[in-house]
Amino acid sequence: MQNFHYTNGQLCAENVPLSRIAKAVGTPVYVYSATALAENYQAFANACEGMGALIAYSVKANSNLAVLSLLASLGAGADVVSGGELERALRAGIAPQKIVFSGVGKSRDEMHKALKAGIYQFNIESSPELIALNDVACALNTRAAIALRINPDVSAGGHEKISTGKAENKFGVNIDQARDVYKQADSMAGIEVTGVDIHIGSQIDSLAPFETALLKGLDLVRDLRRDGHNILTFDMGGGLGIVYNQDEDTLPSAADYMDMVSRHTKGLDLKMIFEPGRAIAGNAGVLLSCVRYVKHGTARNFLILDAAMNDLVRPALYGAYHAIMPVKEPMSDQTETYDIVGPVCETGDTFATHRRLSVMQSGDLVAMLSAGAYGAVQAGQYNTRPLVPEVLVKDDQFSVIRTRPDLEDILKQESVPDWI
Ligand SMILES: *Cc1c(COP(=O)(O)O)cnc(C)c1O
Image (cartoon, rainbow, N blue to C red; front, side):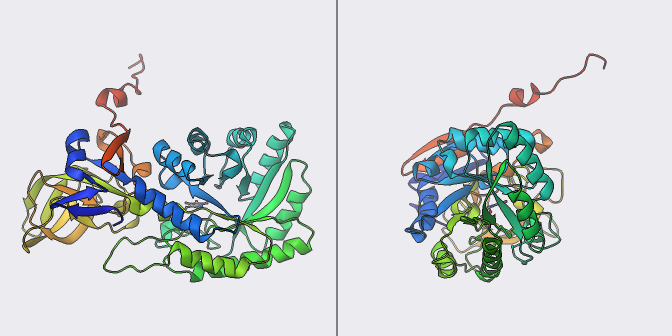
């Protein structure tokens, strides 16, 4: 994985041994490489150089303020899906003019906040949402720039829970209804129609579904322009997949993806917007964990870690694969097959089954790879396990970018009514 390598027998993040971080911060802990984040962003930026495109990093993939600030410093915009994410993006120094607001259920409050901030574009997903935004914009005596998120009825995405572009998904406006909704939008005093938006899913491993959706979207752009709409922007959404399993995956690069897009959009006079999340953050981070016990059962051997499904839910939620590496470089060929699990009281709290690893002992450290996206952001406190902290590494330095709350922090948010 990028910027995570063995040096002197120790798995390092850039030039920091993970064991040093474990010692200083404790485990479990997320560790991100600033260099990998920057390189992944830059791969997109370089690939669309000269296109005048906006790369709006999908904040929900990894929303830590330090991560956002780093990307902001490189010129990234943001795709946000809540008022909370909007606040994060603004505090990280991302210019409002580089922020797009997506999501099927924006509240009026969130719309108000985003209009006040002066964001670039709302991606609108239904006619009722459009009506609400018009109300809010009119009350503020302004106009909201919108793109309609079109559901192109394309099957894509590594898992049914992250496929969003099929007609039966909750997302977007059916492409056959789109022209009517655009017409409705055009008649609204608080709405300025500016673009078309698609986002068909996540962890997409080939260009074909993107291309199909893009072509459908561009047909719509032509229709809309013929209908008299001033379509200026085209938002491709996110969804480009990453390698989770070195042995199996081959994936198109950001450059391959951009080549395909620019081939079809050249000369159309559209400002392109891209919303990569996973492709920027995913392979820039690991979840570092410690083996608590090695349990030799009758049917299986279990590695019981101190990390659990509440810290990284992807295996339990999506059946996701994460490569797992011992932090101490294996010095012999001796291996053992393990089921790798957490301490939470759910059978679903399993990171991997039948995984061959060097022989492990209690106290050994392991890293779950490709955990930089949809890891920490989806963490919870199930089983009253404190939220997992985050560390950012740059070269031979590291900083804690989110601390581990102590038990008091957690318990003080709760209260017992005096009638008990
Ligand atoms: C989640 C999401 C993204 C990012 O998806 P990735 O697969 O992480 O690139 C982009 N746009 C929208 C609207 C999303 O919901």
